[in-house]
Amino acid sequence: MPHRHLAPLLAALLALAVQAAPGNGDPGTQPEDRSHLPQLGDPYLPPAARKPAQRTPLAGAALQAQARAKLQQRFAAADTLKTGSISLAQAKAAGLGYVVQHFAEIDRQGSGRVSFEQVERHQQNPR
Image (cartoon, rainbow, N blue to C red; front, side, top):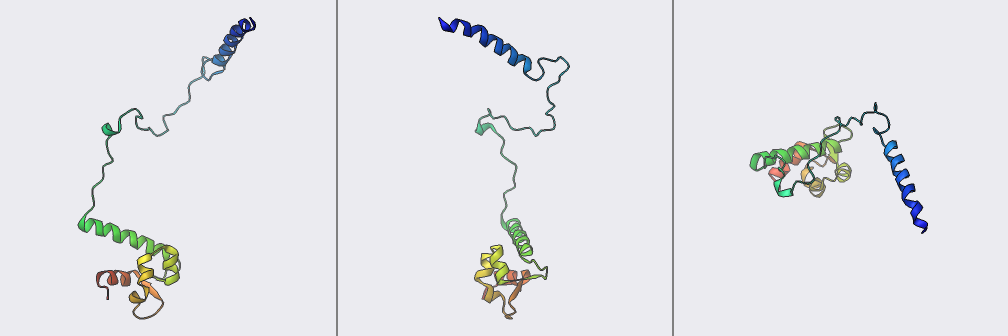
């Protein structure tokens, strides 16, 4: 039978692989330190038993404040010239859809630029 020589060969290869594995051949070799890596959650824990992220649900004034802050950030990012106002092209480039759709109404003076305060006034009292 030609396979009878295969078992000793496989045993020898397995012994070499075990010796070559890190930390096996040399008694002075330590396993790699992984304490600096982030600890991941237990993948074997059922989803129902996992703790959900602690978030405070936003409503009312808190939600409005968060929406205002986000809009103000996006507006500031669109104001590439740092003038305190943006043009229609800048509003389009920043994806400020409300400002783009109502640009002419917000820009009552016809200056071609709108400030964040003008946008807020228009949101509170659209005409």
